Image 1 (cartoon, rainbow, N blue to C red):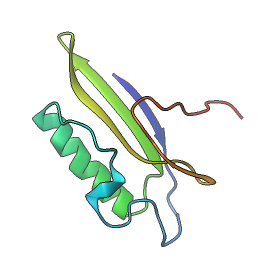
Image 2: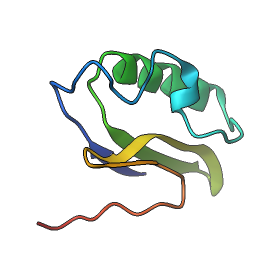
Image 3: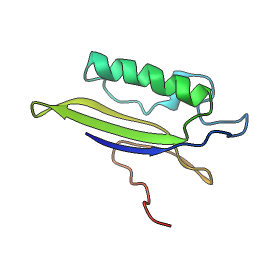
Image 4: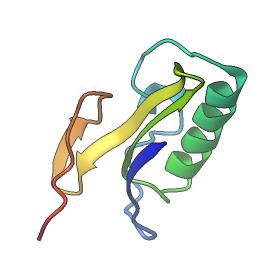
Amino acid sequence: MMVELICFSNMNDDGPAASNARWLYDSPVYSDVEAKLRRFLVDLGNADKILGIQVCAYKDGQVIIDTAAGVLGKHDPRPVQPDGLFPAFQ
């Protein structure tokens, strides 16, 4: 499983979640596990605990989770998409 995550514990009141599920990238739900993960991500976003995330997981060669939510960065408001890249250097 590959997980890429950027968290900020004290974001401003205008956080990316906007108190609704539209904060998630609109894509098919592959499993019950993904549905639970999406609810959890919305909760984290509404609590301003997460800025942007991508999660993809395979089981027995099949995709069971492929979810993206949030924005690319504190100063980059573009939405996270399943095929997006996060810079991993400073």
